[in-house]
Amino acid sequence: MVRPIPPPFDQIVAGQTATIRAAGTTLLNLRLLTKDLAFSHEERAAFGLRGLLPDRVTTIEEQMELEHEHIRRKVDDLERYIGLAALQDRNATLFYRLLAEHMEEYLPIVYTPTVGRACQEFSHIIRRTRGIWITPADVDRVPELLAASPFDDVRLIVVTDNERILGLGDQGAGGMAIPIGKLALYTAACGIHPTLTLPVSLDVGTDNAALLRDPLYLGHRAPRLRGAAYDALVEAFVAAVQDRWPGCLIQWEDFKQHNALRIRDRYRDRVPSFNDDIQGTAAVVVGGLLAAMRYLGTGWDDQRIVLAGAGAAGLGIAALIRQAMIADGLAEAAASSRLLLVDSAGLIHAGRADLDSAKRTMALPVEALGELGLGQARRPGGGTHPSRRSEDLPGLEEVVAAVRPTVLIGTTGTPGTFSERVIRAMAAGTDRPIVLPLSNPTSVAEAVPADVLRWTEGRAIVATGSPFGPVTYRAIRHEVGQANNVFIFPGVGLGAIVSEASAVSDAMFLVAARTLASMVTEERLASGAIYPPISDLRAVSRAIAIAVMDEAIRSGRAGPGTGTDPATEIDAAMWWPAYVPYRRG
Image: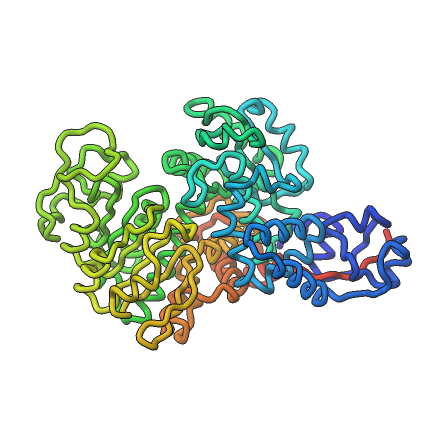
């Protein structure tokens, strides 16, 4: 049975008449309760609103039409972002309805790529603060800070330490735009009511010199906290969250590789938590590959996969691909030989002495080098990870030329990584190359779809991390699917919350990937896209939430109060942003 949310929002989520105690200007200024000009004449009389509003009563549809006018008049996407943020601060129901009904238009504004600019300009565009900010000075008073949260029943927190914001690096306090944006998508995509959510910034300083020089920078003005003191602050945060809101789901967001992997592994079985950059990215990639293989009539044993970039995202993708291969019947050795990673030093293989433990688990076995035509490439000596590729190791171009992969995935954050030589070498060895330049925002994508299609004579199936429009090549229109984590994390989060899962397992992300793949229509695949349109996001999120809840029940991770009908419980938890009638309390 879904645990009800606090009143009056329980009535609002259920679409029932809600009992409201606020009145007059107080009610008009409550962003989660106001209807602005949509208050009926009866409600205006009951709540002391006569004279405070023009005579006309508008519908939410008319209000959306007006907001479209407001936003579309702005010529700059950052100004559109600011305008939408202002609407969210003024009338949350209208904001979420606008986003839910027009996701394709406003997702690139609320989230990538525009949110990257918002992070960079955060100290100069902020109008109203949101969420909780925790600095190193707060390590002994985190419970006190969480007690200041505007909501008493938080079930979902998105938290960042701001160090690896998209492909932009350390953005200091500006990284808070990411949790705010992700939580907006949670509400629009799967109806988690905003009163159940909380964005958090672990503002542990910044090593971004430009921010520290900015006299208007709003964050903790100090070099970034490291080592034991950093770990102590994270531990204080997790402990305080679980003490105040037991079972609250924590989504780790935009932590740099080393911390991202450590924190995920440290807390994944202790509290319900996951890292979207690692696990969400992996699931959306596996989902796209499964859809592509269905369309091409191939399986995992037909694939040769090369991943460029071995940060947290690349390692997460590789791990879930290997898990999917093994789950579908491949032997572990066969799965390992079909999956190659290349980092800034070159091919990652077990003969390298410079690999950390995370990379070593995904390294190509040495014995597979000769079988793949790569020789006995080894990095001489040991030492630290080189900042550029060693001449003793095959780089991306050499690996692609030797292996002729069927799938090429990029998480490097470096534009131009997928050069014409790389793509043409890939295309020479496979009829339908699958190319995924995933880095975002758009400025750091490894390649642009138009180039990939031109270099492959239109044979490539391309999906990107940032949104790209259709490409016409030789009179054929190719849709470009967006491998956006938004297809995964809202459904996973909702399923975990409703099932009161004790942990978010890798199996849940694999079932999410399979569900995503099943939602791609044959018509969509035939057009070249291996992901659904963003307009299908709510339906995709619902299906994934049901599948994740099923997996929680099957694996014994669901809470004791969980019912046996996931579809009914998920539907009951999904708020559709709409006004309901009010009566005076």
